[in-house]
Length: 126
Image 1 (cartoon, one colour):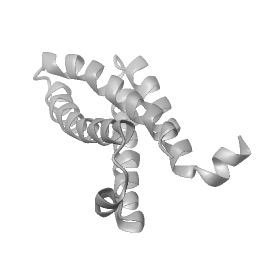
Image 2: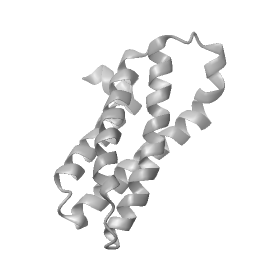
Image 3: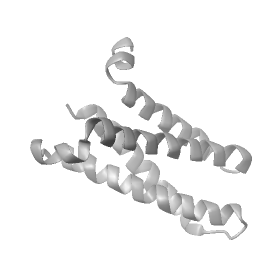
């Protein structure tokens, strides 16, 4: 566990985001808990994306890397996660304002699968 903390703090933070998402989904019937948890998860994820780009230049480094299937799949999942965050925020805001959107729940399933897939592939990429 100590190695994870010192060598992979972003991966640990990503695990924390997934925990927030699970707790947020479990609290979906309590908007005063659900919304802050989900917004916190989104903001942490967004901050990690910005950090990875600004400090590590991950997008610019892609052409110089060996494009394995796993890396391509991870990039795909990461992109889909960002798109589905947008869908979830849009439909979630509509729901919070009383304009129920059935796509919020349906997209949540796809979002959680891709976000957890993103987490798992992040540990598998060297």
